[in-house]
Every structure is written in C-alpha cells, then in structure tokens.
Amino acid sequence: DAKTTQPPSMDCAEGRAANLPCNHSTISGNEYVYWYRQIHSQGPQYIIHGLKNNETNEMASLIITEDRKSSTLILPHATLRDTAVYYCIVRVAFAGGTSYGKLTFGQGTILTVHP
Amino acid sequence: SQTIHQWPATLVQPVGSPLSLECTVEGTSNPNLYWYRQAAGRGLQLLFYSVGIGQISSEVPQNLSASRPQDRQFILSSKKLLLSDSGFYLCAWKQTSRVAFFGQGTRLTVV
Image (cartoon, rainbow over all chains, first blue to last red; front, top):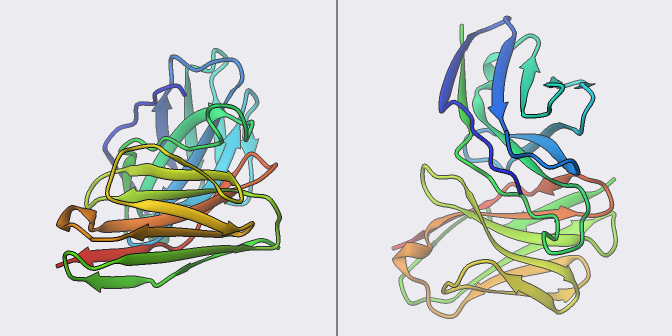
C-alpha cells in the first residue's frame, strides 16, 4: 500500500470549511484514497473514498488531483463535533489477495475546530 | 443493516491474567474480520485478520492470539497479559464493499 503524508495538526474556526491535505505520491493505479476519522476514545469512522474523480457525500467532499499524487478532504462547515484525528489511507479495494483488505493507518491529522 | 458489537468497552486486568475480547458482526455473512490495537498517542496497528472460520493471520509477533469459531465472531485472547498489552483494541469488518467498518473499541489497562 502506498504511503501517505499528512500534517500533524490543523485548526479551523467553527462554521468555516476545513481542508485537510494528504500526499500520496507513490499511489498505484488500482489504489483508492480513503478517509477515516477518530474522535477521542471511539472507533474510526469511515468518511469517504475515491479513485480518480472527486466525490461528495453527506459528510464531506474528496478532491483528488489529476495525477492522483495528492488529495484534499473538505468538511464544508466544520462544527465542534468534527474535532478528531483524520486519517488518509491509500490501498487497493479488493478484499482478497495478500492485502486482505487491511488498512494501514499513519499518524493522521489532528483537526481542532474552535468556536 | 450491518452492525458490529465489541465488548467490554473498558477492562482493567492484572499482569499475568488471561484475556478474552469478543467481537460479533450482524447483518452480513462471510466478512473479513480484523483486530487492531492503538497504543496511547499512536496510530492503529493491525494485529490479526481472518477471511473465514478458523482462518487467522497474524501481522505482528506478540503475546496475543485470535480465533474465529463462527462466521461472524472474532475473539482476541491472551493466556498471560503483559503491561505492554495495554491499549485500545478495535475490531473491524469488511465484505464486498470497499469500506471497512469499526467497532467502538475496548480500552484495556493492564496493571
């Protein structure tokens, strides 16, 4: 699985958009970009994933550059409850094979949303 | 809909005591199941994964073992706990979708 690089921490004002970057310059053509977040003392929560195209769901938007070497998770209107550690992960989607669907978590970005 | 249950939520155990953490998944069949551990202030580390009943693969050598006696049941065990086994243990499942879902975790403190 490709390695990812994220800033260790970021701040965001409540109500503003939070833009969390992730570099994955060694990503392979069949690897997806996944985002999870972990609120203190809880299990990781799936946010969004994508391959090439930008994606949007009820939680966030995912913008992937054309060369796929980086991506940005956008929380359009951050709230205090969005304070969490955000993990960017790249991996193949197939559940079998040698990877068996495992997720390799890095240190993530600690996002702090303040009033 | 699919749900994952993990218990207990917190556990304090003395050094040398045994451990059994259980994880069950509802609403799906033949999922891939995973045990992760998160030490204080650190990222998640994959411990074990299973692609079927009785099939267990270990990612790192350690004092723990895992078993899958039923399709939707995954158990993490230890015969004798060490202080270094303290941490936040998370069970996860994944099937044909590309997304893995996590339980709420068990915080284990070995004293």
